[in-house]
Length: 243
Image (cartoon, rainbow, N blue to C red; front, side):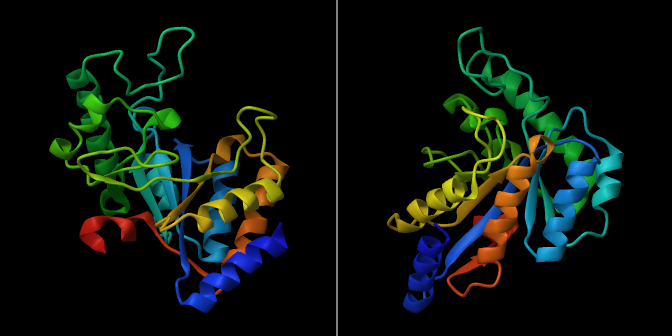
């Protein structure tokens, strides 16, 4: 699979259309050994990372840990990452199970909390827990000051920019550990082959990474960080107002 990815990237380089890649990591709350490893990887490789931070449980410790680091930005990851779906349904915090104004009030509170902690490091992007959000909640996001929504997979119609992730590091429906690097690279190749895929988002969850997850992520970085067929960028640079 490494050979196939290099071939796809070589084709991009030859065409003068390098792929644009970006990295989002979900569920950050506080400093931890796993977060330290992620931050070192980002800093050592020069690859920007977006931390989707859960507002309610987070505090000054995370802001202080990120202080003075280059290339690390923060997005709003719902409010408390609490499931409000009834038993038997897929987990959602921002679904239609509660009135939209109640959900939006929580999101606004989380947005303000993170702004107070992280200042200019915070981008006006909402990352819904479990990558699920009701249309009625989406419609209220511009009124709260959000410029973009980021979930997983094909974009849904929305009254603001949608900057999704496409390649998930984790095997949620199997081992619940990291996916083998061949599976990860195969997903990336398929996404590269789509007509006009736009910026391709890589999704990780540092708190649940096992050795396989870290290895697959490092393999991906090894193959892409200096290849002329792709370029790593920050979510901040993808926002419409900043292009």
